[in-house]
Image (tube, rainbow, N blue to C red; front, side, top):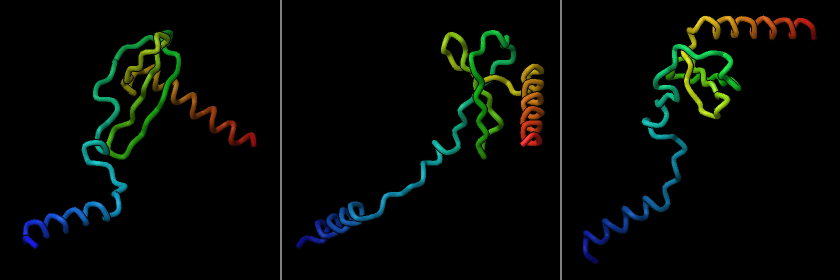
Length: 98
């Protein structure tokens, strides 16, 4: 048997019988959802807010607008900071009540 053919068959066997990797490629793992943020967005335009915290990305806030468009909102906007503070207070009160 030709040595090149034997090497090719061995390489194919390794590829076929090697267990699949569960890891994601680095390019997908380190990609943040929000690459840029909106600094001014009236609260009346927002249908819902989603908060994403991933290890390699800053705290991210995604707003789904009434037009069904999604935008990333700067988490430092004053009204959003107040919203988060109020939400934390409500969570603390509800835990004390139980």
